[in-house]
Amino acid sequence: GTLGILVARALQNQGFAVCIVERGVVQGRDQEWNVSWEELRPLVRHGIVSQAELDGSVQSSWPTSRVGFESSHHGVEFRAGALNAGISPQKLVEAARRRFEEAGGTIIERTSLQEMEIYDDGVFMRLQDREAIGARLVVDAMGAGSPIVQQARNGAPPDAACLVVGTMASGYPKEANVDGDYLYSASAKGSLGHQGFWEAFPSDNGGVDGTERTTYYFTYVLPGEENLPSIPDVFDEYVEALPGYQQCSLEKLRVKRALCASFVAFRDSPLQTPFDRILQVGDAAGIQSPLSFGGFGALCRHLPRLESAISEALRHDLLSSEYLSQINPYFPNLAMQWSMYRSIAKPPEGEPEFVNRMMGGILSAAERCGPNVMMPILQDVFTLSALGPTLASWMARDPLIIPLFVKSMGTENVLSAIGHLGNLAKYTALSSLEPLLAAALDVEDLVPAERFRWHRRFDAWRYGSGLDYESHK
Image 1 (cartoon, rainbow, N blue to C red):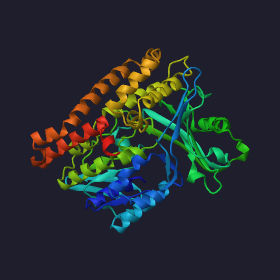
Image 2: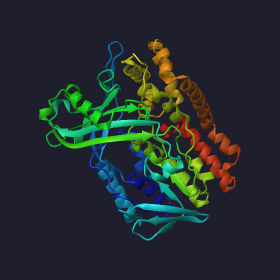
Image 3: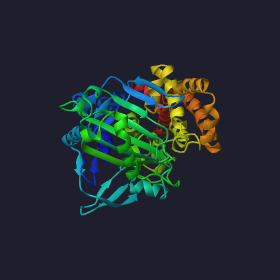
Image 4: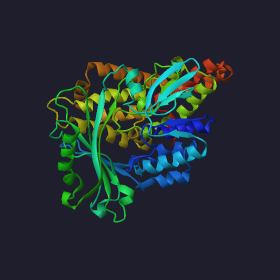
């Protein structure tokens, strides 16, 4: 996977010999990803790229992005400093690859992995039209569609899918092409029967003439349900709605790039590997929110944790599934987002404005509570200190939505959400006690295997409670 280069660089910086096997070419896409500056800081802090290389990869930036939901009775609109930069994956991957190869890393491109044989002392990988290679550990960064992931999940279908379409085009009104939309929904459920959302930002700061803009249109679905829209259906709706959304004429636009994709996710995530000497990272592990399309931000956030955990496992040869599975533990804050997903993908019948009312209500409640509450929620990091005030403010402002919200979730999801919320509180308390526990138990003096277990517990509590967000600000 392309973003595997980031993990490869992190492990290389820890002194390990790393080889990348890529079916295609290790290069980023010729597009821009909408990100927040805070999400990018671990890339410099952990030596993946330099600050100058990161700055050169960020092609667009603006002070704040719009958050808005149109509704006849519950419309909201405000601005926030989130997703206010556009990064070129092509330039970022190029910089990381250059550093990787200069430091002695090996890249095998245009080569497919055929099969792997796992032994007590290593993994034997057979490659297409190449000599086989051996390794102590295989890091699977091939995304949710990885054949290794499919085998680990026993062929189970995904539980969520975000259908995304969009274009980068020139010809937009120059005077309006100065900032972006974090999340905007201009109407109730569209003709496809699913709620559509928009994201937009100036490409390369508007390009030479200031009129270049990227626009994405996406919707969430439950795979396996009847009458689901197809990607072409979503694209047709995008083209039909774009002029009204951007106040422009299609005839004036010149499309330079187009995107159509389905980003799938599995509820049983993060994936705890059932195999010795194989570990999933990034989208392959399912560490991203089901509400996001693509897990670049999540991978950057988890990079410090992955670097230290994988390095510790390698140094002490703790490479069986018993230990590697602890690197991708249960995170209650991620599980809570899964509980909310169903309400967006399958809202109550006869309530066409429910999703806008709910999403607008939650995000505007977070905004009323101030930036310390709003920012982690906008970056898909649920913390107790952010979620508690947000839910209280939302329900106090719109109490009549509560029965609709419960109905949309279903009894099973409601009970699960309550359990995850309780675990979020527990993980928050435990993470706060980490320094005392580490000292009382003399964790650093324990044997390697037991020390590893405690380190992974500390990681699970910190990241599962969202307290890692504070350390990355």
